[in-house]
Length: 514
Image (cartoon, rainbow, N blue to C red; front, side):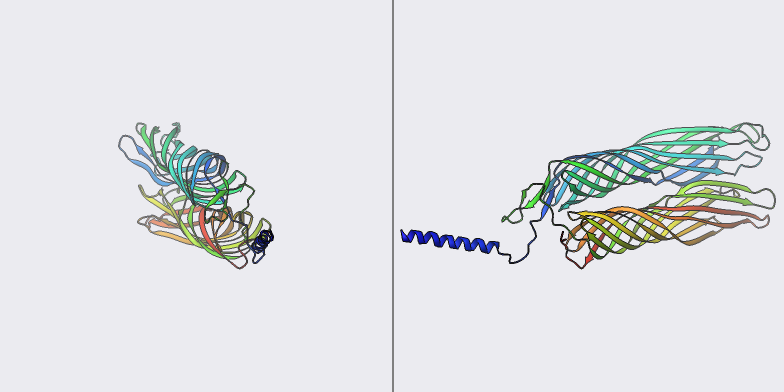
């Protein structure tokens, strides 16, 4: 009996010692890391902004002989707000997420151009004008998604088919010549709708925010092919019979979209590390929290992206001579420089609770450029090429954001500086150009996620306004008659910037103390 009691007591002591050793605070450990399961169906809504960049040609030709009165190339840039809904399904395998999503969007995108030629603004015929308006009424996409998920964030790329309804409205106006001023002015309108099918490509970031709710920031590029149509009119004559003309319009439809959305998920949820079973995962209650990330500290990084400007422009082409009154061709259109960009940023964040305050400065190289080809007033068949480039820009901005679960959503704004080149070329009479440094302001929003260690990644949209600029240049067409073509341009610089970046944070623990 004594041996039995001794054995029980000794075993209990050993067991108690082992338990005490297990519970001893030998070192501080953070709770098991939590992950989010993106599997399942979801639906939600979104809102955003879109900017078209549609290379366009317009011509006005005599229907009998094919004589082209005006042939111009320029960019239509419909822009406006959008809103809609999406529905989708994801399947997660480890860190990989595969899914499919469909969405429908109503948009307020539109742009307008006013083209005017004075080639016949003499006794042979009155001035004529072509007003162009372009709208994107709605679009829808069906896309696949492939992404990488960790913690409570998901970075993904997406692509698929796109559908849209385009609307094009034009008004052609032609006055009578001086020989027959009593003849009525021709006014002809044309309205055309185009149902388009094309493709959509993009990228985005989605984060789990609370319970079944997630939020995303996404960029999409739409290519809807080319639309073209022709309508006819009859010009009042300067002399002789009325002349039939054909007005032809051709445009390639390409759209750049930034949008933020919120989704409600059915299924999925928090995943916690399996205790004592290696890298496997167990389903866990949604109350399990991720290791909080500390955003405080100095950081540096780099970024790449794409910029699309939408710069309202007026161009006055003034033909001056000593043999008569000046001829004037005044047009309003949109110059839309677009291209890749890249650069670096440096900043500092300070975090208190879930509020993050910071400052950031960046410098960017830009390849954005655009041009328009306009008809000359003084040379029959001559064309003047206007070109515009954004060479570089820099910003200094404040940031304020909300952080949780290794992600940070923020808004940002501050000052901006840009170097812009403008030029006018009139073959074979030469070219004029000038560079300008412009100051303005910038505002935007973005999302940043903690990747591993001190590395973070961000995706952001910026809107930059560099104000207004004017310039002019003279081209000597005929020195004997003192015929000069004077080009006077005025433009406002407004740029839409989409970019992704990688940052390295210095100092401080990565895991926050709250």
